[in-house]
Length: 494
Image 1 (spheres, rainbow, N blue to C red):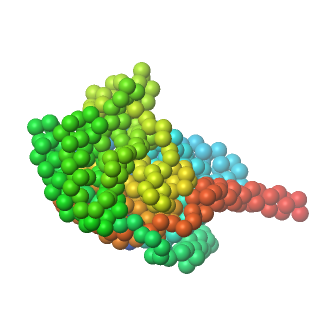
Image 2 (image 1 turned 60 degrees about the horizontal axis):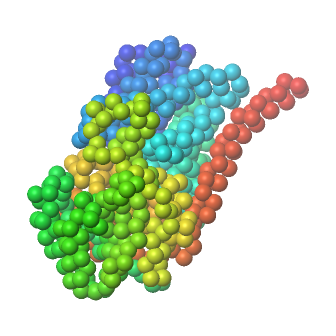
């Protein structure tokens, strides 16, 4: 038993795990620092999983570190439900806890524990995929805080970044346990390869025909926005902001459900939008966030409306479990008492991009932008840039708007495409294809952000081939233990 084993199993370790987890979780999305913190932030998880200790102590240590580690990135749920914080953290910690029985099995094989990073990366991939997915805390997201480290996402997506980060953490943990500098050297080689990939990445797109955009950030009070008594005042605010849009603007972008009662059926909002389009200086198209109702259900929608009033519509597809729909309602209806949502939404089906003159683009709503594979599928329909329409005002005063913007930046790198993110209360931003924020607003500002997007000339490797490089890298990481087993068998025969 090593010194590390003794410490991890001690009572004093709980205090250090709590303080360390809180610090690491808080710093994980901080500009510049986040990526470097991510290189060691998962080491305690590995130490707890691999060190010798009693089963109860192992579970206790993992949940103490996990609770304080995930808390800074989840606490904003308190705006809706405090109990929900504990449920989400429990879900995230249980995903890591799956590695405990896996590690027990892998120890039976020479070099078997080297499979842990790849298995963990697979868990993260599964956790962020499908109707019940939620990839908010995926390790690879931290790479965007240091752009040279995030460049590889254009080839392998966020899951490749996750695999590399988890492998580096594993090697550092092995170095602690076995006191072997070779693991540190291997980790340094992986880190160098990740950073050097930045020099093979293309620069920002600055040539070709540009699309002039204006992002409307009205900073409407959320409760006034849904209160009919304030509708007319809100419409006047919208008209005032729209009047500031330049005549040269091609596309005016509005935040999620800016028109909360439905522009097709609710007369005050319909009339206000008609007035805005008729009185604009130029002939801009408008991408408008609005609730939509029909016989099929209630939708969270985006309408692309041209200056003649013709429109196409996209309905949100990637709905958030519990927040926007109840999975398995027969068994989960009790959650309505814990997290009282206004209404459940109907899932959209349209995946075709919007068309605006010669340009095609994808529009997604709110947290749809945090789903790498989902965005990749939509952009694969021939889109040249991405628009994110969101209302992060629900999380005003927390770190959630910053975290959301960071993940949107990763979508720009993955797709090698410009992204415009428009938020009701901030942060609204224009992001180039390298993930750099070209222009942005602050929180709580009532403003119009104008800028230009350049359509991408060709899709990135990740856009064309999806998870291919991630899966190849995963296969290589799984091949190492097999190689060690073969070497050991060969030596025994000799």
